[in-house]
Image (tube, rainbow, N blue to C red):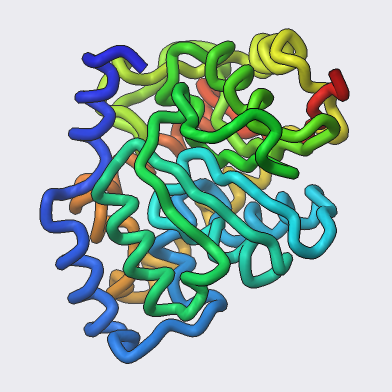
Length: 278
């Protein structure tokens, strides 16, 4: 990632006092004494459309044996990584560009009692600090839209996967017409690098991946946003939520993403792919 994009991305994701804000929110929610490794934090640490439901679907699609090594690229606060470690009995490594996200992810892993099965490392997705053929599977949710060098992202992930290893992807793709900003991943178009679904598939093929499944999840995403809006209009704002780490402006960002999906300016893709054997 070039220095300008790196700086803008780091500034966009998270507040300086993020760890303290999350700790206070946990106390307000009655979770300061411990976190059950379930859905206690799903409003906070599933940083993607459709939340925990999308994570469950992707985990089922990976279909890995117990003990598999999984890399979560762009792990955020570590919710999906902890879910994978708990549900699949897999050894999970999460990497994220933001040191603030990594700090919170480590804290939540300790508090949920799964620190022995998951680790978090601050790293650039375009410069993964691992040996070749280290992981059985890789995982990325709503990350690539911040990365201009999509070929570099996918080839780097392929490098650290074992031959035949699987890649689970859940991402926003470009639709027709310009996006309405700000959105959850960018304040302006200068740091938003969406590809159309066809171009994304081509970049993945060029990087050495073949498709196992490829699903358009746009309709499900729109329905999820509608359900979220109905729920929040009937209930007070929850003490745990992404506004804690992204600030009060996050509500408007999420609303713009919902609008972009409904107006066909953006879409959602969920896919499982396989790294070529050679």
